[in-house]
Length: 243
Image (cartoon, rainbow, N blue to C red; front, side, top):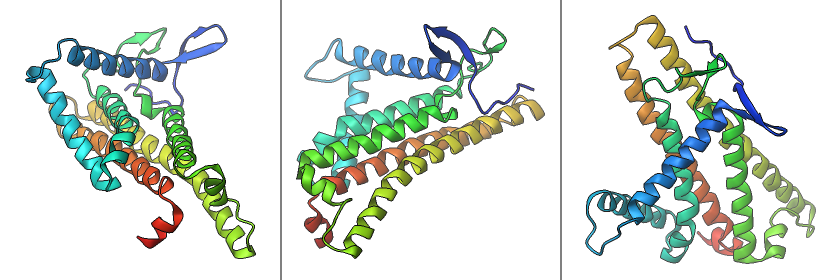
């Protein structure tokens, strides 16, 4: 049976930077996204056909979903590129690991590719981008002083304590985001490897179906949580309390 490692394997280095099989899978996922964007935008037409029609339909559905959360078309269009990039990237790298032979190609005795989100570094990086991006959006929407005042409030002991709790909550978001995505993807990868070894051929097929669903749900959950936090951060606090 293929060995299961918690840490990714270093394949080679670029100067002082080690390149692991998870990083290589990340780059491959990015290339897939770029290739899809290029294929769609190469021959745009007023009457969409083929892949352009499919992509525009997906974009319309996702934009409507974002608008349902924000309740504001302008903010939905503003947040759309940020949150949907999360969704598409996570979905693609999650689904790529289900391609037969994906982890079977060896390079220097180690798998050439490994699901990017089964390495904690990738979900952690995504979580940091999500939380930091939310803070930047909040500052841009309500101003630096008001946004910082949400976390550092010296108007009274209770307000100060509540602000510190909010600050701790931001750190907790990073941990929650990262370990939720990592845990589910890594567990799925282990399940597929074990079932393929114990009962090969047709029996593991249902588990592949489950992992397709889990990969989609994890991408959707990460995206929707980011969107909710963005919406809250960019809403003046007196408005948020009114709702």
